[in-house]
Amino acid sequence: MLVPEPERHLQRDLTEPILAQKAADFFSTLPAEGQRRMLSVASPHALQWTMGPNPWIGLSADEFKSALRWVTGSPQRPVDYRCPFCRKPADKMGVHAVSCPISGAAAREHYVVRDLHAHLWREAGCTTEKERSPAAFPGLRPADILVHNLFPSPPAAIDFTLWTRLQDNVDELDQVVRYKRRQYTAPCESEGWLFKPWGADAHGGLHPGARSLTTMLVKQLAATGKYGGPTEVSNLVWRAISTAVIHRAAAQLARHVPPVPECDDVNADVEPEEEA
Ligand SMILES: [Zn+2]
Image 1 (cartoon, protein in one colour):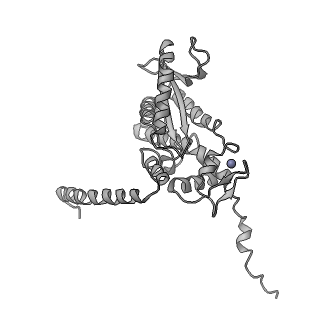
Image 2 (cartoon, rainbow, N blue to C red):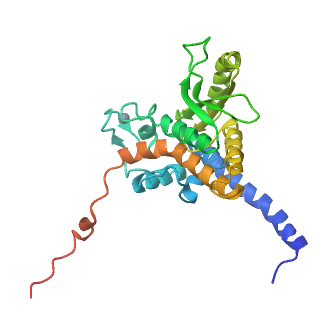
């Protein structure tokens, strides 16, 4: 039998403060790094990559498993180890793996996010150019992608930041975004472009500016009628972007996890059968 509406509200009103207090109590017991991870993972759309596939980008089985351990704060390995790539001490939780300067695809993996965005904006009816500089500032590169035909806006110069310095405080991504805004807004305006910084951190949390830009992308793509209605398009785009963001950490972590034994090894300790 359905519970009447006023009683359902009463139940919610009574339980929500208790749940919020329990969450706050749990949060206060975590070390600083755990708190940063929780804040990132709990931010909107950060875990959308766990919600199913999308047509554009995926994770391998090993990357998916490594990423799940990463966002839940579970160890990647049984014990700390020496990094096989840079030979420095590395922690079992994967913090070193994600930021290792030698195995790190720090620069390269940024392109996964950039190229996915370029593709999605083109699907939404825009044209895009990569790595553009304003004519008066040839030494600056504020546009990882430059998006044209963004009705009713002028061209948008989108700069992507994937933040991985886990030792720093949670506001650090915001500081990077604000620094880029100061550096690039005026040069972009001199060219008639809007500067749009887009930032995400290693656990999948998106900067508010990135979320609003992605919301614009969803609306524009939904208006084309490709990929279904607004709800379907929203689900697909957020899943794809969330996957691209976590892909960088996932790929790094999977590289650092020792290979899983072959299936045959499972039976290695079984006594051989007696010969007839
Ligand atoms: Zn290393």
